[in-house]
Amino acid sequence: MEEGRESWGTRVGFILAAVGSAVGLGNIWRFPYLTAKNGGAGFVFFYIFLLILIGIPVMIAEFILGRSSRRSPVQALSQAGENNWGGLGYLFVLTGFGILSYYSVVAGWAIKYTLDALGGILMQSDPQKYFESINTGGEAVFYHLLFMAVTTGIVLSGVKKGIERSVKLLIPLLVVLIAGLAIWAFSQPGSLAGYAFYLSPDFDVFINTYQVNIFGLSEFSLTFLNLSLLASAAGQTFFTLSLGMGAMITYSSYLSSDEDLIHESMIISFSNFGISFLSGLMIFPIIKAFNLSEAISESTLGTLFITIPKAFQQLGNFYWSSALSFIFFVCLMLAALTSAVSLLEVVTSTLMDEINVKRKPAAAGSGLAIFLAGIPAAISMKWLAKADQIAGHFLLMLGGFLMAIYVGWIMKGAFKELKKGLKTEEAILPWTILIRYIVPPALLALLCTFTWEISLELWALIGG
Ligand code: TRP
Image (cartoon, rainbow, N blue to C red; front, side, top):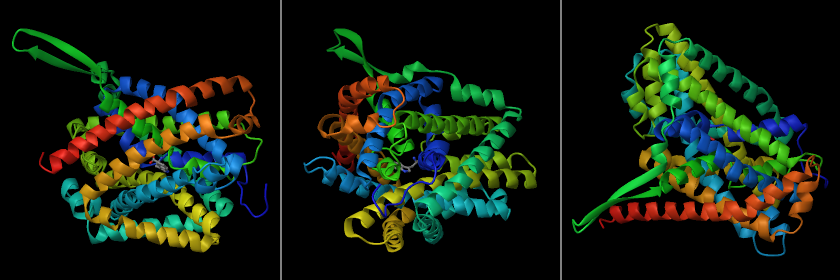
């Protein structure tokens, strides 16, 4: 390894950091919500299918890029071949910048909730009104600033001392807390109904059926795959695994050559899935026990922030309710923190590599810029939702699509890099097939679906 480049202290440190990046708001809030909305257990199976078909292969591609170049995304992409792919690296940095700017606002809400749960205010307020009073405006900006400051503090302290040390503490704590809440939820009277609501499969959501009537003469029905559902599931796969914007490239650039990249990517992906699944086991019994399941089907960003306090309030015991909601929002906060660290690390390490600044000013400068860029999201929920749709879905899939083409078809030495440290060479062939022939066309189809949907929205917006 060349001199001066930082590295992970231990293999476990790297795995925990990658799991910390993956496990975030996407697991506790998005996964259960998408599952409940899209057919329960059917969606869970489909999600695992996408994980294996698209998620794991793309993660391996990112690891190959990062470890072979030992550089942040822009240079990783321009170094690995003679051609001009560095631009894709800039797209990654832009995407990370965009995601963190609104992600931090949502994480800021979690800080506010945690403090008010502790102070007893949360359990005395009407959840809907409370959420509306804090989600935008001065307080939202303030907690967004606070969250960015903590995130910057960790990234500033470096790979080993900042990132690795914090995830080694935070990830085990997070798992214990979520598991604890899930066990408590299991003991609640309505828990079985909650599991049933969460997991009973409904496969009809995967297809759309249209009735076609030809001049009143004959009528028949046409059945299509529900592409929009598939696109949102694929978007979730990218978002939850932190793929498509170079976070995994950056983390693996601090890695040594004796790791088995395929093995590590499976450990990371399935740990991430396990925590998502566990979050569902925690959330649904709580919500169902208090008959609040209708609330989850309203597709607002605030579902979790309104429904969970409502459910805890109905427990009827002020101290218990406050304590449980405190633990819940601490989980959300911790999960968001270790993810935000990975997003900021991409921007920071790019500055370090590209214009040769030291870590401290690079982290502080990027943190400040992202705070400023996030102010609109802290003022308007509409902005926040749009930023999530564009940076958190579309750009990730676009980045993943281009990266699959690059690593699968263009990059020199990709296979050689993958072989280093690999325990089972038989795994190379399936990966090659997936990254070359399955991932690009699948993502292309979903990108088209997405573009189509966004155009329709724009069309409606300009009054078409
Ligand atoms: N994976 C995180 C979540 O589920 C969010 C996240 C962190 C992310 N780093 C990322 C998403 C990089 C996309 C790309 O909440």
